[in-house]
Amino acid sequence: MRKTMMLTTLICGTMLAGCATPKGSTPGAKQDYIRAMRDQTLDDLYATRPDLEPRVENAAGYAVFSNVNIHGLVVNVGQGYGVAVNNETGKETFMK
Image (cartoon, rainbow, N blue to C red; front, side):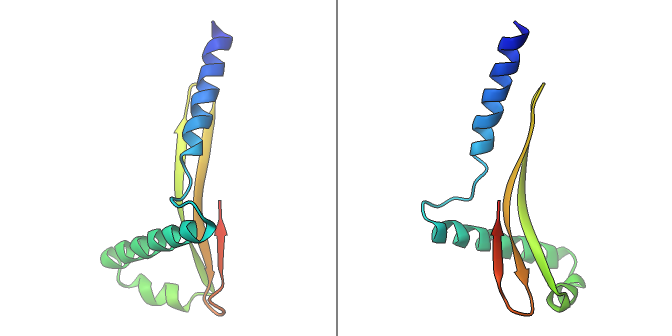
């Protein structure tokens, strides 16, 4: 019984973790989705803390991530995606 419960929890956690990917069927579409998430997150941040906008713009870089945590009885799974931006070069590094 205990093994069945552990296996079921593991399978469900793995299946749900697979859902924690950016939308889009191509790498370019996924990157566009992450950029939109980044822009919305920064807009929300600046709306509540406008004093942070110049700090982010003048920093060496910044990163924005979407994080999904799934907690089961036996297994805890953390999945997410995002982008790190180098403010000097504008280079984006997409991460999972």
